[in-house]
Length: 348
Image (cartoon, rainbow, N blue to C red; front, side):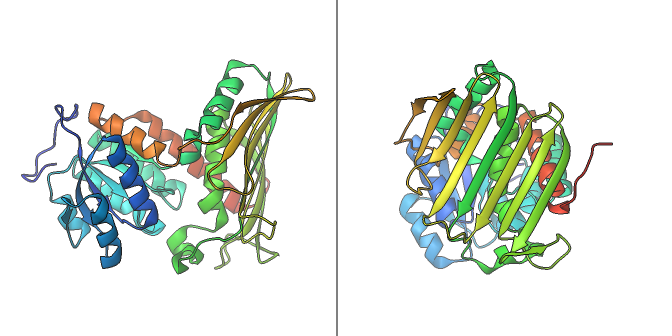
């Protein structure tokens, strides 16, 4: 809706950049703002954050933006969309409120702390007929795009196994990440969400027949009913195609480097893998394997981190209407829920 309470049209923004509000302008919120502004895809019309320091930093990027004190005030402005980069517990409700006001939404992951929350947000987007996207950014690396094309084309044959890894040597620096009611979980919902998304996005969002997972906190097992959140997790997922997907992720792992990030796919005719370089969070090499031979598909540099946000901004400018692609988010969250249940399951 606009300031008079009527729904905006669903089409393009008539030659002008979409007017976007930024809710939460910490490091990641500002980074996504900068990527959109450098692309020229949006006008940063409004900023909302409880931290005066964060607001000052954001105004360096968008000095003409209106600063508002509350999300309600932001929603009352004449905006086309909102970028949400707030704590995880707020994502679902804030997204729903924005969608109900007729705004498109770009939200940091996770969209919700459970499948139920994600389904509710997607339903709100469908009802409002508005674009909804989540910042699952690793699928926008050049390497993963090439690997997905190899897999989907059949170049590496029938994929029977996939290994995906994300170890972060540091872990979160905010207390709410360690409160399950606020975060929805630990390293699985923080890092494992990227691995689940990459696996399903690459392999075609097929049904998971069985899930066997283990959650640890400081080296000892925990369950999803414990108050603690996991800092190490493994999961073995058997898909309906027979493909076995192994996931492993952690915070604070002492592995001699800042990060270990990889996604490997093995087929009957070859393999393909993405892996980070020298512990980097941003530099990746993608490779194609044929027997013992390796072909490099791409290597750094690749400025990918803001690409998902830029893609949303461009789509917003073209058409603000609902895109059913966001329903893939439900499948990702459903699999995360099953990992948290932590027992071997078989589809009924």
